[in-house]
Length: 500
Image (tube, rainbow, N blue to C red):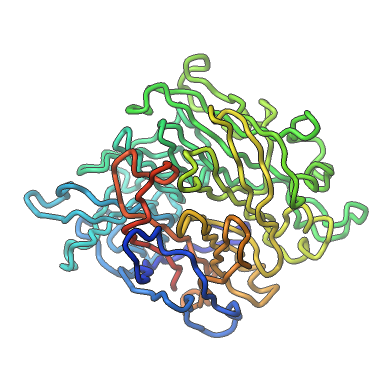
């Protein structure tokens, strides 16, 4: 995901993380080893992972695509030299060959899907055919260009499989609509403008067992001075401006049929925490933001409806504007979330990236209000329509700018950083990936210390785009969040790492 300071696109490298498994063990956790220090932003240090794990390269950016289309010829670089980035991963294991561009060819059963985050109406979706060693058929393009030579997609970010509709979803973080695609060949991708909104700035997305979808929105707010009393102070703090959404479909097997889009509303002392268009400074420095980010507190939440296709129709709409009008609660750029395994989808964690600037972080009033980024925990009631929210991690200069999340097991949350070039330079520190125990039984462990190569030094925006832990199950009852979830018992982990 891009930080505010990012101006270049990134080239993706996919690696696998392997660790010994015991029969019946859940996932790859607990993670009990760590990398002591983050890498400095000097030279080209190699990435380091905690002891007991290893990095295994799967593909690189220059690997060719078996069915090139227009300038989309390689996995991570267009024919015109533009770098692309494969962002969030979705790993699936099929019962049989799902097909591909070569009729009769057996593409195997194990696949890794990614959306690429480049711009210029040339973002695209690829599938890595994990069982195939033949380079000519290793990577398949799922979204060819149209007659214009463009895909008309930009900054594809989140990806997920929907077991009840047997579809794939990909989000566009730059304001494009959510993309739906077939999981088998051909993908026949199309957007859901009038159902989920356009422009939309969604990133992470995951379904529950009832077919409802939760989205995180990353849309930066108005910049404000770090000292409200000094108009000449740096204007690098941001007004909370993004929301967490839930979509309740009319037909879980067909998202095109519409449904209700809702947003999370937090209430403190019985009063909703809302966005004030005429007071960005007041919102940024508000008492409610301080209370919301104070460890040991808990506040009521509920979902409020912002759009209903049965009432509002299927014309394209702006979810952010409607969430504000519905008195939903804004956050500092939510990036991703995950349901807690075994919670019956009643608990999820989501993170916010914050302001990604050390000048803001140096102001105690801003640090106490999430300028370094945060991780929240939401516990829902049995009907999942209301519940409570609490701060799980309040970011610091050492642990900051949280991006993608995943669970290593049912008690270990993994959070990747995306500090951006400005914060990397200010602190002379590259990104890390952190492991947290949900019960606080151990101090956070640095799981990965990200390195940097020569291309990243030139192009900038060096980041890990997150971890993805999955056994690839396509069965509805075996997805994360179910009470008897076998998801982590036979593990395969994909970790996407930025390389230049």
